[in-house]
Length: 95
Image 1 (spheres, helix red, strand yellow):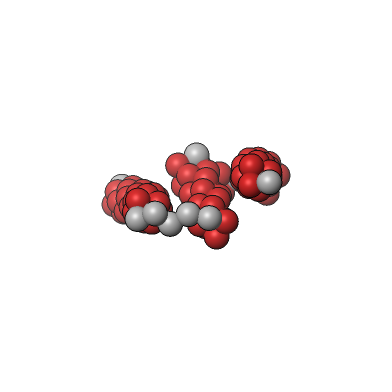
Image 2 (cartoon, rainbow, N blue to C red):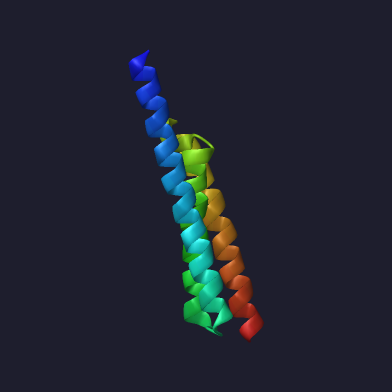
């Protein structure tokens, strides 16, 4: 019983840390956008951060951290396609 309580506390601490990291990334990018940072470099930073946040959500809140590589790969590929598509759309809009 004590081990179960310890495991639950550890899971709660991990989830809280991941949530705080997601929040910090979101606030940092919003602050950078708020001060007028723009351009390709900022967009690349935004897309990379979006990808990292998606992976954190999948691993910790969707429970994919301990599943087969196939399922993790599917979500990794999905995130990669979405982020790449947004990046391509951004580059095409610059032309």
